[in-house]
Length: 172
Image 1 (tube, rainbow, N blue to C red):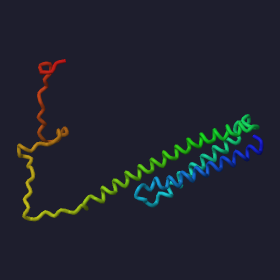
Image 2 (image 1 turned 135 degrees about the horizontal axis):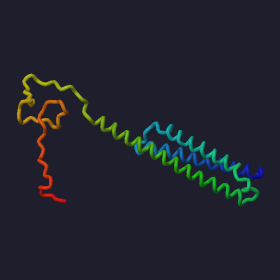
Image 3 (image 1 turned 90 degrees about the horizontal axis):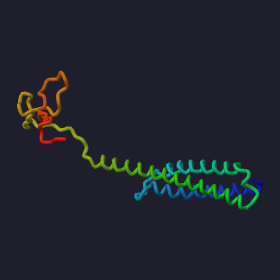
Image 4 (image 1 turned 30 degrees about the horizontal axis):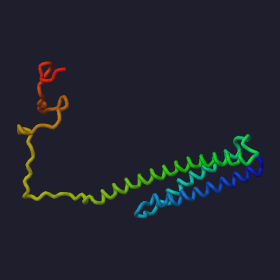
């Protein structure tokens, strides 16, 4: 690539990357804060946009040195800029996907925090001395365990319907 084409390509690419990064940062900060205008989302947006800048500058640098047959004409410069813009669009979409994922995580976290704050505080229940508590007794015939006892454990076996075998109402 001739020096004029290389310089022009790099300047145009830098302008596009910085402009798109600013759009992502400003929009991402508002997007992550949500409708309530929450604070503390600027740093997350800045980290995501920093990764976008690094990837885009790396692609710009690679495209400036790769493909020496793409040089010497205005059409080649426009083609190289077009390839760069397509790759930058892919990076933009991936950045938006990361921002959307962070927003979804924040919404879920706030939802669970709101549910926890609505729950009444757990207080120790002190039973009055006059309260009568009826607990089942193991010798009571109405009391049965909810599960089958482990082998070696005392307790009645659960009542199970008899095997119907081939004599049942359902035949295959």
